[in-house]
Length: 471
Ligand code: ADP
Ligand code: MG
Ligand code: ZN
Image 1 (tube, protein in one colour):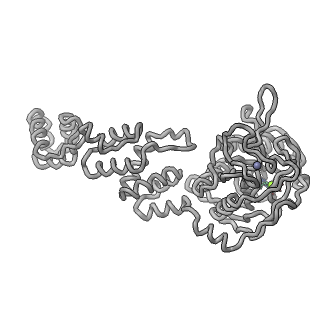
Image 2 (cartoon, protein in one colour; image 1 turned 135 degrees about the vertical axis):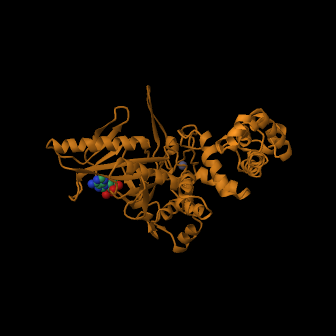
Image 3 (cartoon, helix red, strand yellow; image 1 turned 30 degrees about the horizontal axis):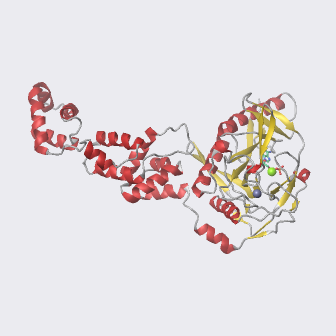
């Protein structure tokens, strides 16, 4: 059988987290009572005029700069005309010929192999309302209608479902680092259309199908795998793949034909006569560039500069919540390696990583900094530090007070510990004999016994010093 290569291009929509909608003053807020954030502009009543939200423009440019786009000094809003009940104006304000951002790229890494996925452009447009289907019929909520969206269109540079997911994850990460979107999957902040074709390497690209109704990264992966197999089957059985839009059915795990013909000319795009072309000056763009938040790659380099290894740096930047937390703790207690170790072990262990979205670390940076300082200074030992952390994980309280109240201070009084150790040595002559004969592994036995006798409060460093002194 011939060897097929999958070719994938994504069109990723992301809602911007502006205060108000894209062309009116209605609130941009998820989860409000249906149809409470609506006005003549966003539900398309006659005579209402749209005004571009400058915050939306700025956020679109911010994302463009973060992924290396060229920002167009001149861009134009067009009307994309079609009828659907979630679109009361019967057109969507979008951009086509002159989008705000051109080019750019997303760099992914799969099993240590880097790859660059080119973007064709990013444009700014408005979201449609939301249809809600239930047993009595279909209802529509126009709160989402008019919310600003950026659409990021990739070149067909991906060749597997894994690459497509890595691309989306990277986009989500950058959206969060730049702060332009809440990037919550379950609130529909990121949605994508997936274009899939297959061909034999070295031959022209095959005909693509566009997959819709994909609501999770998992669905992206499953739908691509299904669609690639389906297209190969079509070709192998002597058929031809037709260009069409297919609907992904997540329960059935299959794609189904929705509509076969639809070209951009069918939408009769034309410049929106109500909105003037957008001119942005080089100076305006330069200003946004100068205040661009630090991106994951840059933070990673910074972390390696201050002595973290690459693996730890990657772990911290994998989620903005972690790296912000790390930065906040280090700003109070500047022991990067020590802080990093605690976060990647004790914090990670206590988080439910299954729920990847909206991670919340319940201990404030200040309290962790205080705890780590006590641990590092030898006021408490590791067991004590963990015990206190368990407690402040539940009610973020002052670790210094907990240590005082619960008497968790480490025993660092050498002469007191020496007495304890001496007694244990008397009680365990065989172990002492063996230790003296070179069985140094028994050190942990003696440390354990001293710990037991002191209810876990002894300073292990001092016990070890005493062992070498007394043996
Ligand atoms: P249209 O103008 O019809 O929407 P575009 O050229 O804008 O088509 O492409 C839309 C998306 O489809 C892009 O993400 C692009 O990468 C992807 N794409 C184009 N051709 C193919 C193909 N042969 N196989 C897979 N994806 C493709
Ligand atoms: Mg397109
Ligand atoms: Zn409105």
